[in-house]
Length: 544
Image 1 (cartoon, rainbow, N blue to C red):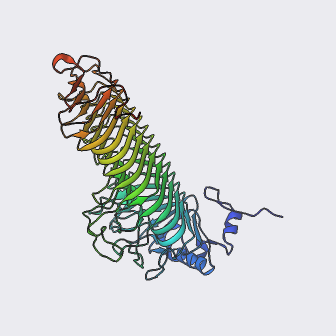
Image 2 (cartoon, one colour):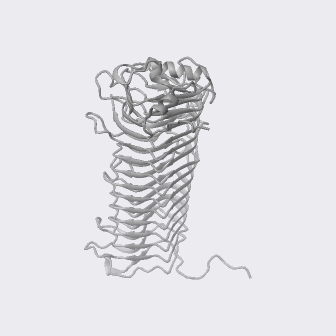
Image 3 (tube, helix red, strand yellow):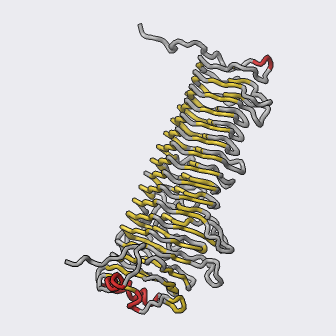
């Protein structure tokens, strides 16, 4: 028995492999008139091969090395594998989308459209900086489908829209791809290289309907790179992966982003807008405007706050189960905080885990980690260094645990907790913050501040403290076993521990605030709260 002749991406081209590709189930586009010289329109020949694959019920369409001018939108159909060999380039030559799964006017609802598609290999050159091709256009667009794979390819210099749109898509994998270069034709400074979206309207997805608000789910994006191409008059992408439209009662779910790299992106590298059951892990972010945004539906957006029937709800909605872990962020920019979770009064982020990340550097007064309107969050084991604002900033949240973090030379506070309930700040190490080490302000109840170490607070401010409960009251704070030291700076903090008047129900003991502080007398503790309990025994009464 002879060994079958096969070709896979990266293999050398041989006569035997080319002959095998020409068989009926493996369609070589050059056999259908596609010219790889880069001088004539190759799209009609490629489309003939794609149509034959459709008519056969599925086939592999193979593109040998060469430059293929694409002068019309390519239509790819179900059960097709489109394979560009090493050295093959699709060079866009029409002011339109490069490829979409199906025909204009088709009406496959839900996930029932053309599915089971793999696109792999080659350079997809959108030429967004070329005269006549600068208007907004998509490279690849998939809608109302399932089982989509995009792998081992590069998409370059997209104008305006997206490199890959997964709209109303169930189960997709994008892996080992490079997304390089973007051009904003005007009004598109928010575009994502990979957009995850829903079939909301023709303005959101222009390829075809129906507009039944089918969301996307079970999406994995792994080992991809997002950045710039160095082509003149292009930039890196504004955003790497994300969404920017929503419908109330719908969510994108089970999104997994792992082991990708993001470099020089202008805004959010990842924007998890109205996503649930999401993991973002093991990624690297360098010199991006912001790293990861986790966002409920924006309350002021009149389109996103409509329900599927088009009724205005004037409300956001909760989203839940998000993990951001093991990522590395370096040289963050000034667009937003490095990791930011932002809810609304009518839409809380629930069950959030930010664990084991490393953050080194921000500009433009941005914090390392920022939480607002979040509930049941864990912020643990992160290293946050050299950020321009606070290391970890939280507000309007409850049932949050901030523990075991190492925070080094933040420009403002080490950790802030404002308007929070039932939350813990435990076992953190904070060195040389510009302002206070730990800053807590009410209104709030039942805050535990335990076993933290703060050294050298007040690097940049004349009114700072190691640990500070400020002037808006907190009721029921436990402050136990913390250690604060004045540090080596010439501008010492006023006290190691300061509790302003108006706070009540404070229980504090075993805190070590030794050293010479800048406040009158140099003592380490100033507690003006109402009748604080300073014993080390159990309190609250004991049954006989």
